[in-house]
Length: 202
Image 1: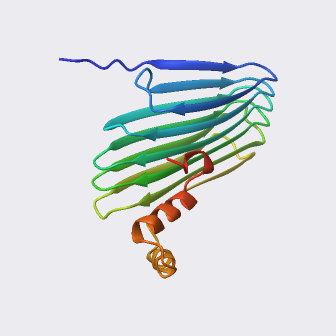
Image 2: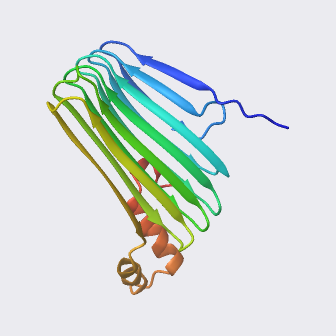
């Protein structure tokens, strides 16, 4: 029997530093913790595709005044692929900002489950946090589940979160096909327009 060990990777972004991080599905670790210190900044992209069954957990700790994090992620689930993604934005210091936007393209018999949590501790005064999950289903057997949530221990914050799951817009599809574009190519155009730029060429 082959055992798969779940490894946790930790990254610390020191005071006044900035880290730009681009990650793809990688079996070397399935959980990532990022600690952001005073006036430090994270810019990150996450891209998950080509995995039969994949789970990823990320926790971002904004633990210094003025720490910021901006994350864009995408799951492109081919036929029968299964993804489970969890993210948490943990604010513990004042004047911190975080943004996590996750997109999904889900194919035939594929599925994606996204759990997003914003946690605002007592010391996170004037924190600003946003979390969005948008998913496009390409087939009637495609499945997506989204659970965004916020846990705030005080009210001196500005937070937003949301989720949207939909199928390809048939009106847009027919419009493109009416311009002489094939159905397959029209789907590609709509998918490319839906995904963030870093993932749109997949």
